[in-house]
Amino acid sequence: MSEPVLDAAMIDNLRQLTPPGEPDVLAEVLELFLQDVPRRIEKLRAAWAAGDAAELHKTAHSLKGSAGNIGAQTLFGVCRQLDDKGRAGDLTDAKPLVDALVTEYARVEVAIGLILRG
Amino acid sequence: MSRMVISTQSLQVLVADDEPVSRTVVGAMLKKAGYIVHFANDGDQAWSQLDGENPPAIALLDWEMPGLAGPEVVSRIRGRKVPTPTYVILLTSRDSSADIVAGLKAGADDYVTKPADQDELIARVNVGARVVQLQSALAERVRSLEEALANVKALQTLLPMCAYCKAIRNDQNYWQKVETYFHDHSGVSFSHSYCPNCYERFVKPQLDALDDASQAAQKQKRK
Image 1 (tube, each protein chain N blue to C red):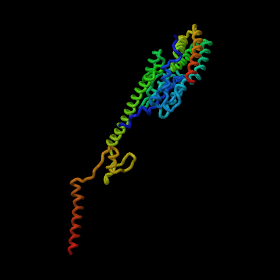
Image 2 (image 1 turned 60 degrees about the vertical axis):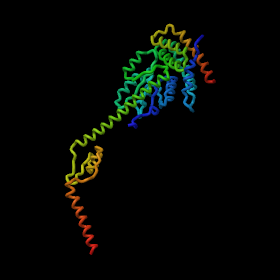
Image 3 (image 1 turned 180 degrees about the vertical axis):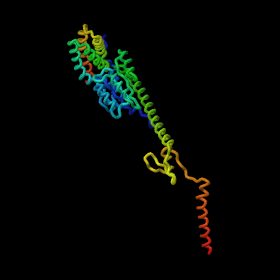
Image 4 (image 1 turned 90 degrees about the horizontal axis):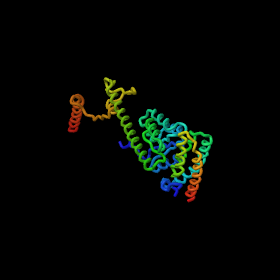
């Protein structure tokens, strides 16, 4: 019933970007994601805790970009909602979204792990 | 004129984005299409590459970057007076049409929404490559026309000529043979011949002398 954690077509496109004889682009991008995203989720949580809407907008915006590039559609949607809230400067209902972001990232991490071990 | 055409394969493209996943994916798409890709993590790095020696011809700039943001980088690029300006494509979110308008007003040539669709991204960068090639061909043409104009001007000015040997003094204060001077400044070549007056004055006496000498030699033999 729920949409896949990672969009198969996007993953396939990334896989095909690897030039012959070069390191795997898909693996490089996914590893970069795992390295970089947790740090920025921490920043976003800190921004939420501090009630800093501008910083929350900035981090949610860049997380949205990362999620979109690997086809993590649900994560992308959550980031977009947080991005909008931050931009509007209204963090009143942001808590469930911050929680959803953490939960969805855990699912993405598992899915990436499966591909990398593939 | 074919030497002016830069092949797409050798064009350099800068990808400036603080978000590493997007930067890597866009870079991989461009590499696959045959471009030489450079990266910048923020606006300051982007500007130092674009303002340096042999800068990338095309720049893909993220709208929201730390340091100099996209619009600031664009306005600096447009402030440079160069014959072949950088072709600028902004990378923006799908949902920010106000940013797109502001970016184009600031001097960007085009925009691509993130996450970038591979086919669309490459098609737009290829348009940029075409514009860059046309501009560089045009700049080369203007340069060669200016050079030709400078030579025409040199010929129109008063030329100092030696009253005796007819040598011409060039801009470097060096006396050149008239043939050499005109060849250098106009591409005119001279074929050497003689006019009827000079035939009578110089050539005929020489031929006559030669004739006399050969007759004298024959008389000598017969003796």
